[in-house]
Length: 291
Image 1 (tube, rainbow, N blue to C red):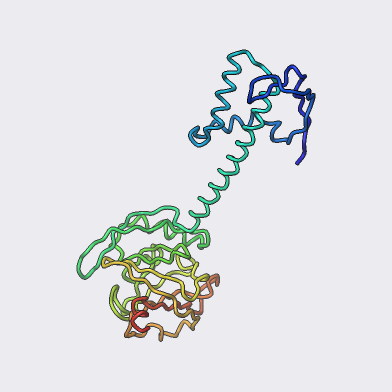
Image 2: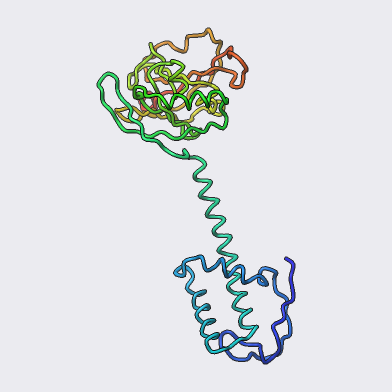
């Protein structure tokens, strides 16, 4: 660190801050670190903090005011006090930067905002208030973003549930069907497959250039949650495969509670994608029963 010489004045102006009396010895100048030479700036920053956190610094400020009231104007005492306070100020600045960084790191894995939404069981008519996060559209196709925003202007029937992969920051409503409108607004249950909360093969479809683009980063063992009016079901990813568009075997019924996620592939293919990206997951309670 670069150091600078600061003139503390003559012997008669050299004051010991602890005794408020002239100190022994005569010191004309002394080297100090650069930040201590900038004490006034740090003092201004220091005053923004709660005095309860740092009572020692407040005692020094009180002492300084007392000295000024007695017309004690000694350069050395003020510079010593400024040096002490600037050290505290530097510590506080670093502490605040670390706190802000930690807070920002924590927020990066959570949705930026949540919106209340009613989900409904179409067979019983039961309704439950849930919440969905604002989608991260940074990877989306520009037209898909526009189509999504247009669907928000239209009133539609309530979704069946909420699809969540916390690791990938996906928190999306699931609608009953795979019409283009529903797939622009959220995800769609593939009709003809298992119903929500039903034992069997539940199929969920989504666009590769929209909500499901982040599936490119999914891994075996990742957790998936499906919230319905009856509660939350947790699944674990058991397989990830790529199949031809014509292969419909993945839609076949199963005897256990299975989740089949379908999107087009390749993710960045221009035009109609020739393949399908399939993620299979099994309900955790079903896995426990098998074990």
